[in-house]
Image 1: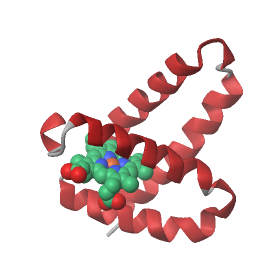
Image 2: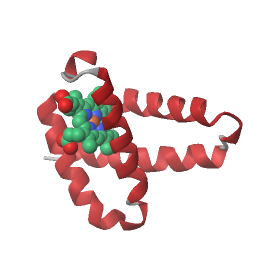
Image 3: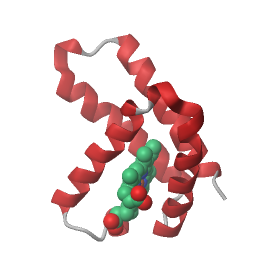
Image 4: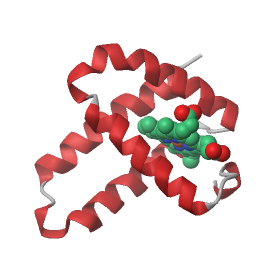
Length: 96
Ligand code: HEM
């Protein structure tokens, strides 16, 4: 999977934060944002991203958030993140 990422790791970190921002900041405007997510999905196909990568990324994302939040992590938070990640990842995977 690492060979997909051409830029240095510091820039990948920025992209992770950007990705989290996209997912959280637009939670209340999902209908309008799904179109943008679909376009993001098309670009990811061009980057060479495959469906199995989304499953792996989902696990890594949850693990990272869980480790970061420590005691503040709850089942409710986990369910909310799983739901939003699954929605966006599915939309990206199905993009033409
Ligand atoms: C919900 C899931 C994801 C979101 C919201 C997301 C978001 C983003 C964003 C905002 C960019 C910046 C470039 C652009 O807008 O086209 C990007 C780039 C990229 N993403 Fe994702 N991403 C997701 C999943 C993944 C997965 C699963 C992989 C593969 C492991 C991946 C690999 C990449 C690569 C290779 C780039 C280009 C990096 C570069 O060379 O500059 N992304 N992603």
